[in-house]
Image 1 (cartoon, rainbow, N blue to C red):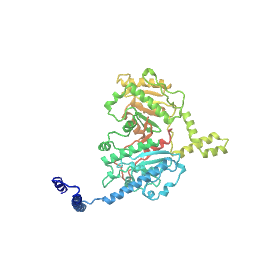
Image 2: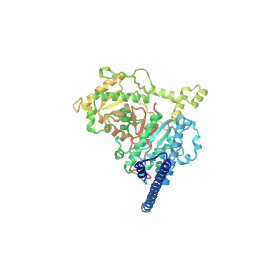
Image 3: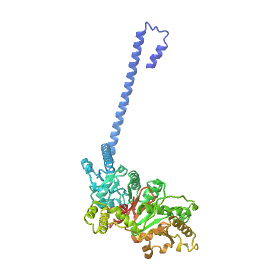
Length: 522
């Protein structure tokens, strides 16, 4: 309409601006009025269309709700988001308190979330405890039962923080008829919404539980790095990871990629540890992995990592890399003898208030007092503590690859490479630490286990089959040669026993995973 009026004005034969200004002004006002009316009419049409659409949507929602009831309405979704936001803020507040040593681990459960005053309580007895982040593993397995049943004991000698959502933990507690401990702290993942109506599907392999276990692990690693803490990982199911699209074959492979370092798997308990040169690869590829430089570097890395855990720093008698073999000089740490290690353990653990008090009033039996109180001190730090030190000076038994360790090349050349690497690493260290190669079929006979407590196997089953036959319930998995120290129970998800009454689950491997962290240098 406005365009038509403008065209009429433009096509006029003549315009006398002096005499027709009023007419022009009125015409323009009319045009504006017409445009406004047209706009209002369009708005009214759009509004009516919106109303009609809303009514259609409501009718559709009503019909759908009658046929297929929706569990979470829009209002519930809004409330859920508000609750999650509140939990996140609470988590950030308590996290800050924990790492400023003003407060130990705080219960992130709903009852404490409603009473923030409880988060201000201080517990000085936990300030010196080791901070440990825990990834919860596959929630359809036994991991959450291990957490709930053993938290009280673990919290005595370390500060565990569990990477899990409260809703998931609450679901597990209800299925197991267990209470969530009041002093438990959780770091939420805010992933509870990925599950359907049933969060936990006991004993089932599924993509969602695989994804959840990976995200818990990923977050625990991130927090361990950020706060220079230790890490405990509960069992995952590798196929569930695969179903979830996770490209890693397990914890260790992810850690290697994350830190760009060759993580070393060491499994066992105080009686015997077994380190693996190769781990989760097909048997057909093991022989090709035994190369001189790779194996020699593995020996160096293992010696260095093991020494860091069990021996104080020294400046004497460090392994020297021979440039003739294409390696660089580097400072290493030598493991002391059992006597020296025990002495240093006494020095590190004996100094506490009770001991000083005893020493002041017992000058006659000072040496006896030190020994007795040290044992008490160690028990205070880690109940049921076992010495993890070698039985004598450090000796590491190295298994061959082939039957009879190759019989001087008759049954394979790989063992000759192993022997050459052993000779080189011992020269670098300046002592006969690595022994072998030893025939795998007789490596674990009682006589050898009396002489050696540490073994290195060339592949997975040659080392772990004897270990699990002897110490299955108590063995743990330790990742060495990384910026963080990670341990894990040496068993799987136990889907066949998950969430069942009277399942006779052994707790020892899980507990040892935490005890180990409290017994080593960090």
